[in-house]
Amino acid sequence: MDNLPKGGECPGASPSKTISREEFFRREGIVHAFLSTDWDGYEAFYSAAESAETLAGIPCAVKDNIAVAGQPLTCGSRMLETFVSPYDATAVARLRAAGAYPLGKSNMDEFGMGSSTENSALGESFNPWDASRVCGGSSGGSAAAVAAGMVPFALGSDTGGSVRQPASFCGVYGLKPTYGAVSRYGLVAYASSLEVIGVLSRDIGLMRRVFETISGIDENDQTTREALSRTEPAAGAAEKPEPGVIGVLEGDLGLDPAVRRVYEKTVAGMEELGYQIRPVNLDLLNYAIPAYYTIATAEASANLARYTGIRYGLRAEGRDFEEMVRHTREAGFGDEVKLRILLGTYVLRSGFQDQYYLKAQEIRRALKRRMGELFGQVDMILMPVFPVPAFPRGGGALTPHQQKLADRFTATANLAGLPALAFPAGMTGYGPEDGSEVDLPVGMQLLAPEFGEERLFRAAEAYAGLWSAPPSPVEAGKEAS
Amino acid sequence: MDTNELLKTAALAQLELNENEIPRFAEAVSRMLDNFALMSEFSTASVSDSEPADKVSSASLRRDVPVSNGNNESLLNNAPERDDRFFVIPNVL
Figure 1 (cartoon, rainbow over the protein chains, first blue to last red):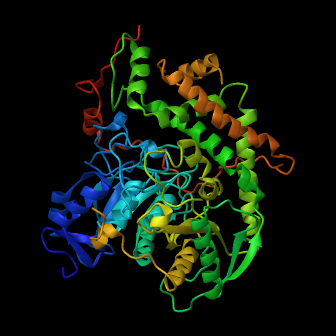
Figure 2 (tube, rainbow over the protein chains, first blue to last red):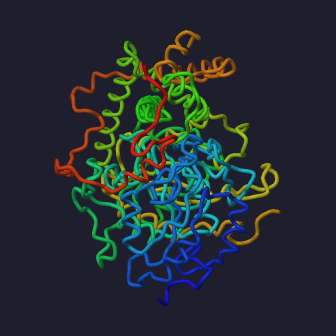
């Protein structure tokens, strides 16, 4: 039991670096990463934990759209504010079996719809580097909790970038696994053909162990698959592959100057590490946003049709059954959710399907095929995560519409079902002259062929030898008052 | 998108929009549909196969036998209104 913490403490930034319950809640008072916590449960749990287990005694944050038995499952929505999950998601059950404990449910944009966690109906979360800025989204609470050193890792979900974008904004690693690598059983459905449960951590070795723990076939999710083939030596193998070829996108990527500087620095860093850099053409990226939002909203309109006030969640009054359902959905959903349901219903309407939904599916098929062609030429593709760094809260700097358009680099991996890893790549270099007192982390992402997660972990580990993000001000206890 | 189209879509989606929401959502939906219109420039000539874009080969179908998960009580406890083992709803007739 040597590696388990004493009473009143838990592993914070890493399994070996404990923080007290008091310190945990001091940090929570700054970032508001959690919607609920289960410290009493954790303390009772670790006293019985077996130290030989893979993730013995390690607490984690679980995004509040992933089921943890006996804990709330709000999805950041008034619709499910009082819902308590009857069961564990498969990913959570596998973490428990490996000795980990779900310490709390982390905040998120309502039903995963957003890029800032400002769309949560149940409270706002703040960036641990600068509380005047967003922590990203939709897995913003998970990223903030990890970056504040409150838990060593967190689960999130990534439908169009919702793990990678907050990871980038908060200076941590964010993995979007191959579609089908991790069971979605117990993940509340938003856009079923795109979304996947992912991992956030500051420790790539821990992320690898968590990914290996939660992945694999699950009879409760028929889209799960075992890795098709192993093109990499297993983690820990003595023989390591040579650095391969990294594709970079041709043309002007339309990046904020600070993000562009970090992107160029990352390309140079990868070259220094021995990777060959090769420009690749991906014109289809121009269609990624309309195709992604057409498919995501269409699926959302179907998946969210289940919230009627009958079997669970909020119920509003109505003179008859139909009015009760309409009033429930009016009162229970926030603006962004309503917008996406309206859009999704519209693109599926009779007469519009060919123009929108079927066209989007054709683009998706072409993009998938193009990515396959590119992975015949290169081993990985390097892209920015988001065109701007963490933006100021309040929607003035980047409107909700602009936030959607900015998903273009992340949505590609979801449309093509590919694994992608966001890693801390550099800092903005901001100073007072940029209107910010705080230097902010910027992440980049690598994409690999299906089940190429190990390739991504190795590249990120290599890059960490050149540069890694310092602890956030909240973790370091140096936040601005 | 005009108000009639918006309200027709909202009715299909079982959403009731109030006076303030109608112009706001009409504008926001139109803006996204303008973006979706970009897709018309994409030539589909290169996409000839008929395989669904999101098809995945499945290896994990459950056996077709009934199982009990023992969650009935906790599921019913999440209902807005229940009566014994039934969900209570307003009259439908």
